[in-house]
Amino acid sequence: MIQSSYVYIGNDSLVVLTGLKTRSGALITDAVVNMTAFVDRNGTAVSGVSLPLQLNHIGSGNYEAVMSKSVAVVVGKTDTATIVAVAASGLTGEWFETVVAMKRAA
Image (tube, rainbow, N blue to C red):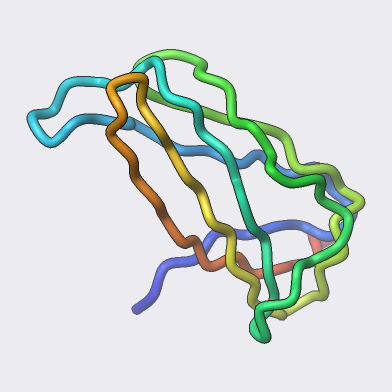
């Protein structure tokens, strides 16, 4: 089963990269981390989010940012977020996260 992240319509959403580490397991706390793309299934940029969205280091190799509730997602549709991390040492990582839009139940 493929795991996904969720964005709730009309809500700010937390974008998180957890436990950024080197291959040897050392935490990376000095990286520049950005969400560089947020696209629909056709590769078209989803409107309502300013990119790149910089994630700030909050401790222990964890990075986060808030994506505004104004992002134009559609309930049940799948989008893809691209996260890029570049450590001060030059080590680079890139992740593609499947994101599903949902409506929060009342």
